[in-house]
Length: 286
Length: 279
Ligand SMILES: Nc1ncnc2c1ncn2[C@@H]1O[C@H](COP(=O)(O)OP(=O)(O)OP(=O)(O)O)[C@@H](O)[C@H]1O
Ligand SMILES: [Mg+2]
View 1 (cartoon, rainbow over the protein chains, first blue to last red):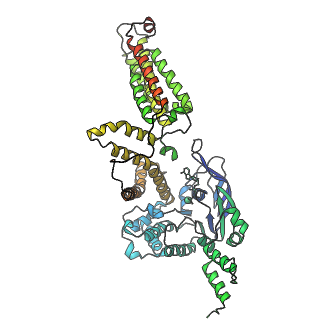
View 2 (cartoon, chains in turn yellow, green):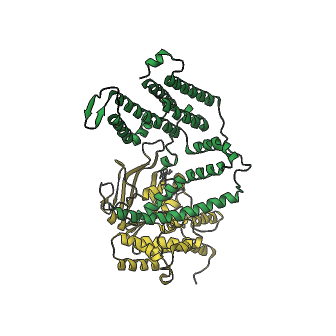
View 3 (cartoon, rainbow over the protein chains, first blue to last red):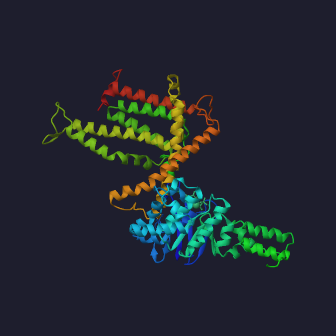
């Protein structure tokens, strides 16, 4: 459970370069949510989520963030406990790999939490398996000689091995091919079984519509509102006022509908659209 | 972060900001030399007056400029004190004595002048960096050094290296920031007080940083190659430095100040009022 209250943030305060990145943000992310955060470039998404595990300190008199009873605006925070609780995966996480073997890289996080070698290794091996890589083949290889998609999985595994309760993902599928995107999203769903709360920043509306149950729209540092996918993508006024695009699937459905095909305009996933089209052309389920 | 990328640059619209960086560099050199010729309190005051006028003209808050003195304040106090207690003057009686230390009136004067000189030496370069971007300075330097091409000094390449370095410093800092954050999120102990742990915590940052720097260098080289970059030969500039009338006026003005200081120092014509001011 993450509670954000009246949070503001200013970069380089008191210099000629100051930019206010966040204005009076109020949000509540509950346990079990798949929480999406969307907004155009520079809207403040990354700045917002970097508060969730105290990578960005809350400035004086700029609101509060509370993560499961831990008040992040307090002077002294138990960082170890917080970082074990909130796992953060940054944009292009593969750029943070450093160790000489994949296994050691993944063990870095758990060991920092004070977990002993044997247990850390066990966790690392489980994490490698969970992200769909072959442990025997990959564990002892250098992370630098893997493919881009593999690197990203290893980086994800490095965070999962810390067994977070809240997983924060900053554009986890950026720069991957469609197949890679799908695989990473499936992977995140699998992770969600153990780590109930997921917060995801994405520019891909299809992912957001398909996976998230709540969506916060950020615009120029302000929250325009928190909606369910159906609310947001079903209302033209909302889309207009928030400056959000439709998912491709929904756009397709709207176009088909406009051409007189009897499909529901509010579909959000490929499967839903598939079923609608089947219904429209009269194919019976085999 | 961004304040680093711009050096100390303080954006404002002022005649000092708009001046040609080449002239600013020449004037700075002239100024530094002149400061070494200052000898009397009057000449120090004279120089300080023009420094203040320059600062006022530049529209940079004067506190911002004085902040640069913060860095040298220890050196300043220390050298001034040393000068005061170790100065020896056989022509007058010491004002105070304490073991091997003697304080003379002339020693106090000399110490004040030393401190004043140091302050003057630091202030103007600060004004220069506050009013010109690193890129401007780099271009100015290249243009000033271009006569050395005759000696087969690779001036253009040196300037290119310098400007690439300047351009990449912010990227490097940004990258470091990101990696540090990523490793902190994985529980790395940057906050630890144990110095060994702290050094060890740097390894997970330095390695990805090297990797990405090499990648960046490769990409930059490829990008330059694919745009047919072949060095200085036949290369023109998009932003040509142009000297304005006002730049020449400023230079002449500072030359005049130098001449004044030289007069105050050497008193070639034996004017009595200069002798009177020579304390
Ligand atoms: N380190 C920094 N220093 C100064 N300003 C910054 C810094 N990082 C971000 N900003 C500014 O803060 C604002 C919000 O940036 P942020 O990175 O949070 O945006 P974002 O929504 O994550 O964008 P994107 O989709 O491109 O990742 C932007 O205007 C940006 O210019
Ligand atoms: Mg971002």
